[in-house]
Image 1: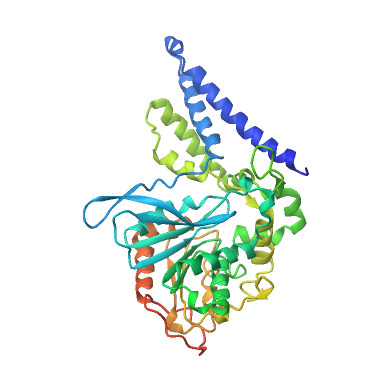
Image 2 (image 1 turned 60 degrees about the vertical axis):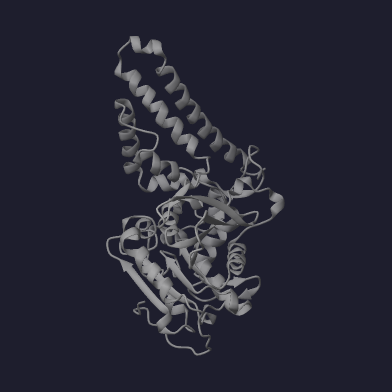
Length: 427
């Protein structure tokens, strides 16, 4: 029962604020209130509306919202979200465009498990559907997974990726965004030894912490500053009685959201103040820019305690991937065993979460890969979000990724030769 009361207390506070918002909105919106022209009542109704929506979104999984797509024939085709592999902690799903012939490019997007749902990559999916068959990892909220399903740590995550790659086949091109980049690299190396024929054609790593010591950020500083015991005492709680995962040890989404918001508290405070004024003036709408952003940003998910703690300890503190010492299933994974998979790294020059230098380190680890199979790109002026979902992704990075995929679409000629790495190579 340890810390279960804390989890339930946080949920109670969230629920209370949602109720207060709904109450304020309803009371200030009574028709009789219009008889008293008081701006304070209008502000109260607006505050209540924004507050209720804000706290309600924190426990709602966003919908993909990708319903149709206009193909080259000029017709709108329905988009079906099909589950190909269903697992306790995450599924492999496919965005099938009805009535369209399968595209030559088959892309697996590996979504991060770092507090938000896979729908954080919604715009990335939309941008790729036009030219690719798009698959994505859809991770589940740990609060909804019964304790009987067992643990889920970085090794389990890696093995999930191995199974997903095997299912899709060797003609797949994998794109890993942020947190899963080092584990996706490890999964590819694991396949290189276990089942070489199942390796993907190419691997694109976007803003991932491959070598956390290559460049310091607030994230890496935090990882080195706190001890594992401190994290266990302050960040880990048991899921309360309200959810199917009651009793499971997790890093709660609400606690993560508090950390997210505190990093830019002044900006978020102003955004909500401005939204309340817009609602008061009748200028807001259900799908305006504020609601589109915060409906996604506020929707957080719990991570299993073992996944969070092993990520901090093994990826950030011990830097096991960068040292080529990562162990999966009792076996050390040798990144140098990758000899045929083309690898490209993408970084943002102004990325303050995964600073330039952390991701490109992957190329040095691939000692068995020829220079012709390596490429790197640093996007000028781009922050973390921009390199996979913003303007920089749409205008510059996406075309480069598609060109890289096309350049490595053919089945590779397998060779055991090893050549020194060159991170300045381009493709």
